[in-house]
Image 1 (cartoon, one colour):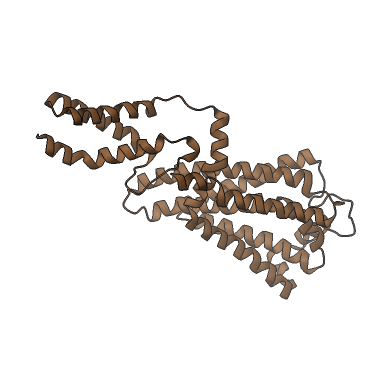
Image 2: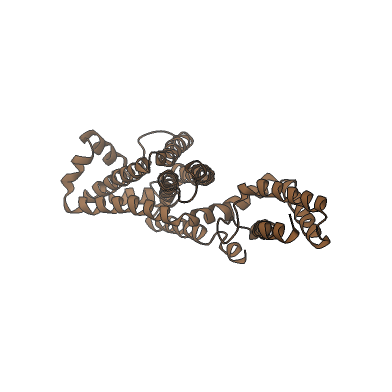
Length: 332
């Protein structure tokens, strides 16, 4: 095969590998994952590296020009450094993931996250408003014993009691909240495997359930203690549920509409993103459980302090998801 034909056949592949290596040469904080603009995904790099090694061997055996051989040797050398470079310290990777990679991943799937937010917050707000107009609808959502239990936990006549619970120490409730919250988050993600239907159901159910509690307590005059209780941990907990739902929807769409990819390939790529999102959701729910157990249940704390802390957490988490890693993405 003539060199011109050989070079024309593989030029696009070499150029894509060069651009990928240029990107990976940047500091970790300035990297981002590309699946477009001529760049292949990280999972494709080993195969691309093997092919360029084969191309170098062919070029040397056929006696192609020194310029072409030098170029291929440079690609092989740079690829070797990437493939066999030592891993960064685990603490460094953890900081990088939570500071930049996770919020970038959430934004990358903004469509599914937006649908999940609409399903959850739409059902939540809708049932809260409906119960202010027709309070009797609460009996269609809950049994009388459940309503009595909710009312006992947020009774304004007991300001010194632990809000949002009937019994249990802070440490015990911390463990309970972790188990409960994390199980909801992971179920929401995994349910997306069933053609998105499971995630849609979990999002709507949780929105109606939480909105039903909030709407009923507000309608009967118990809204003050309830909103003081949820103000602190609502941001990490509710946003984690939405992100879980978005991850589940993304997983389901990989099976329903894989695009030009095979369903197997689309499912594997969506599964990788799902695992990363699940890790971030887990951290958010553990933090929410900590706030809920040790801060939210305090009944004597003044309202301005409670709502200020809650508003600050909404602001900080919102900024983190909106801006985290964004400067690095623009630089890349």
